[in-house]
Length: 168
Image 1 (cartoon, one colour):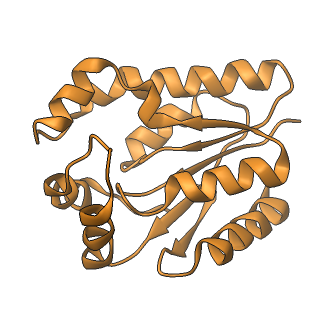
Image 2 (tube, one colour; image 1 turned 60 degrees about the vertical axis):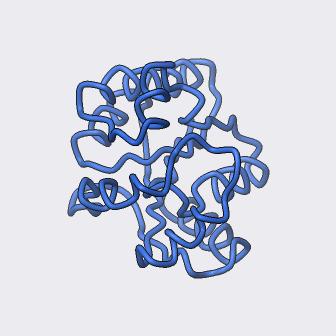
Image 3 (tube, rainbow, N blue to C red; image 1 turned 180 degrees about the vertical axis):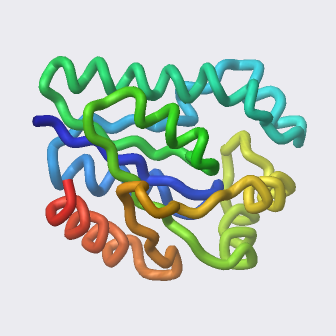
């Protein structure tokens, strides 16, 4: 049976780093959700306008389909994706047969500092507040774990690996 993980959280929390680490450890297919955004979503974010649910739905459906296709081929996946709301995670869960979430969470000030230093990304730091306002923590009944993003990348990857091995 295939396994599928979404490393989630607001922009700048370390999703890509942890997802890449897990993909390397397990030999799974890696998906970077930002690469699935249509040009209209990227243009909207670059101009400082937050995405709404209508903007996100087709993007999330494409991610769910990507995971489902790989599952049908017998391949496991890990995706770096914000997955900010329960309803977004529900769409993702419609894809593969089994999905877990690793939520990287921490203080907005820490993430804002990271975003200020980050270069070459379409997500402006000005949208961080809107992401925190949209963010819904993992709820009872959702398979997942929340990790403190202030830990080192190596510690986060090791904790994520341990959770995956014990729970998926």
